[in-house]
Length: 175
Image 1 (cartoon, rainbow, N blue to C red):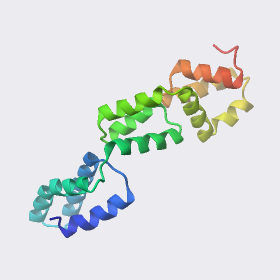
Image 2 (image 1 turned 45 degrees about the horizontal axis):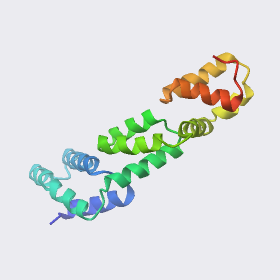
Image 3 (image 1 turned 30 degrees about the vertical axis):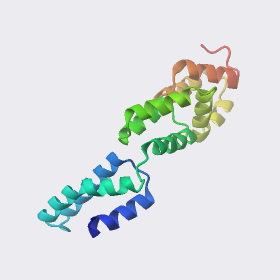
């Protein structure tokens, strides 16, 4: 049986956020530690709550809260809407403790789609406001280099960026 301490916090947290099991375990551990240092719980309660985490995770896992494949797909769609590169998506998902094999599988499926790189670059440029600035400063070579540096920092590949800029903004004289 789950204690009231976990029941209240877990129902609040899981109704608000989508997380995988490993990240949720870390969140519960940090919550217990934080409450202990704020003297909301005693040392004995802290130890019993730390031992209870596995039971809590099993309970919510049986309820279907930690479908990792579905969570990865949702996160990838969200990151795609925000214009993240594949490298940045991979790093974000690893940081959030998702299974590396599932990450690679889902990203590989996405990479096989036609024109996905162009879509991601276009989305990033429009979200950051750089597409409007490119049209204004299209003849300035140093400005185009600045845009390329920003794209590289975001994890986009050099050849894909050059190809996109040449096709979209007619920069055929740019090397």
